[in-house]
Picture 1: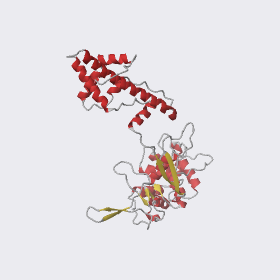
Picture 2: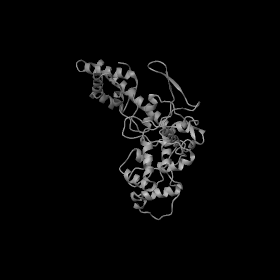
Picture 3: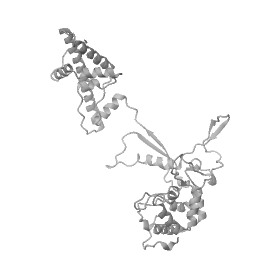
Picture 4: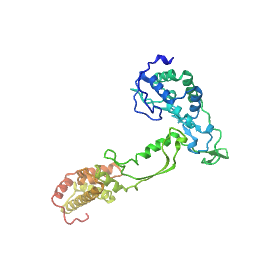
Length: 386
């Protein structure tokens, strides 16, 4: 395959085509070779097979210089597979400064029209439907030997660091099953640095109408190194410690009230005595079917009225608390209509299906509904225990 097989388009060469980031520059599939020519011209140096091998061998998923800047350059990268799967992990380069422009060429996400942005390295490690045209265009511009050097360095078994710099590396000792200790040095994936940076940055963005400041928590960042690009050109911005101080966990009642104010369900009434009185009322209803007189009927009415009265008191207290909470939260959502007494009483744990069935039967009985209708106009002033 030769360079002449791809047409050369006349255009003013743009600047900044070498990058580790997407450039929002869509590339037509038939213009891939031309894009690589423009990148080659901006590079201004020859990308040889030797250079390609060097920068790929110094790329890995874990960069030991993120742990200690004293790590030897020949023992500074490690590639760890995440486990079973059909995708190889994405590496990052850790090279000397003169080689960074070469890395920006093969690590730049190419935004081919109609396809997912992928770099040359991505296409070699995890081929996609449009990998063939991309790599063919790359080979036409830089040579088949360069492409083969990239493939060999990335796909063959990578070298494992055989030594660590003295000091700076955290060391743990864990017991071996057969006795003795095993020395362990924890190393985090290089992608975790950029991933955590993405998580952190949005909490420090200036609020706008379209992007208000996150309302929960306090966020602190302390820069601890200013030039992580010396470790990898793909890493930008200061390295920082990130501290998030989150609000204390709400009690159950407060959390339910908060959800109700924000459009959620009405809070549950968690008084344990309610279950006892509802089941007692159910027993009295069953007894009333076979034996009743003026005294038992009065006791039945008083028990139902007590349950209704206390449920309405609970409902009024919740509504008052919700209204008091609303101004402090600047909530504009209208409060949902509160449930009736029967619904307030039934929404709790009953322990068994049998107990729940008895409670539901009692709270939907004609007698209870009659007492609820009377309570809408007047609540008895004096209610005593049955």
